[in-house]
Length: 352
Image (cartoon, rainbow, N blue to C red; front, side):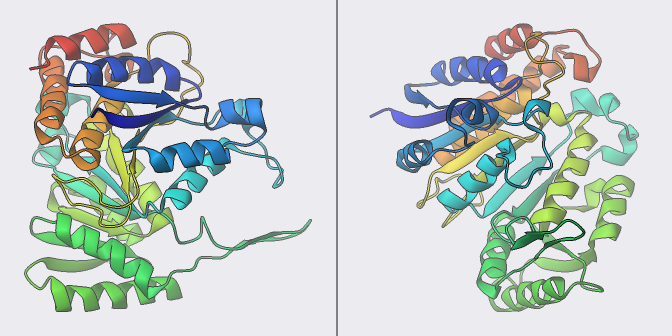
């Protein structure tokens, strides 16, 4: 029986990078795709970025593949107006996706595309494990004419389950990022992570690093990191910073997983996972055929690996992307002129 994948093209360049990704997946096996409106496109059609019907469809799927959401059309400071990003938060919450995995491994063919010197990024192979359903993004919010507040809240259970995912994914070391010198939530975070480490993962090295120091070390010495464990907002910021080590945010995939989230090689046994590129909807280049589809392709590889336990197919996609880049493929964000269609052809030609 073919795996059932819900696809959410979303906004901006989303539909442009979704189409070749489905072509790529179809070249690897038989999959059943079910497309739905999401984000700004759903606001235009239904007045909400995520309808109940779409959430139900995602819950029934084996995996969910998302392209991009958002754009200036829906930007607003009105707290009562729907925003595309609220659909993404609602989808993560509705599917119970608490673990966001963002691998960062600069490819040798693109070392010179990074804003950092080659010798600084060589050997970098890190994973950001970000907590997705707690913290300030989901805390109680208030707004008056003269003030506003956002509550940051975490429970010991929320911290422990994301920390366990990080320790399982680590090869040798977990760097837990917090702001324990200022924030009470970070002090709890540090205590819970330390306790779990001593009870269940003493063979893994654990270090605690303040978030501002972590931001500096990501630029000064990125290869020192193995797994970076962090709460929601810190992880959102640090993972985008880490993405630029590769030379372009257009190369970074991500996976959002729920209960029994695997470190690698096996599917989630709970809710279906959500797989999406790290970059946004890039409305300034939408419709021009120049969007880089590689992060979307690599997100499909994470779907194959973590969502469907198809390791061979996932590796084939990653090897095809690397092979195309080694052969000279460069999209505009990488200093070249290859458009979306040309990039897709290059990867398909390298698919084994």
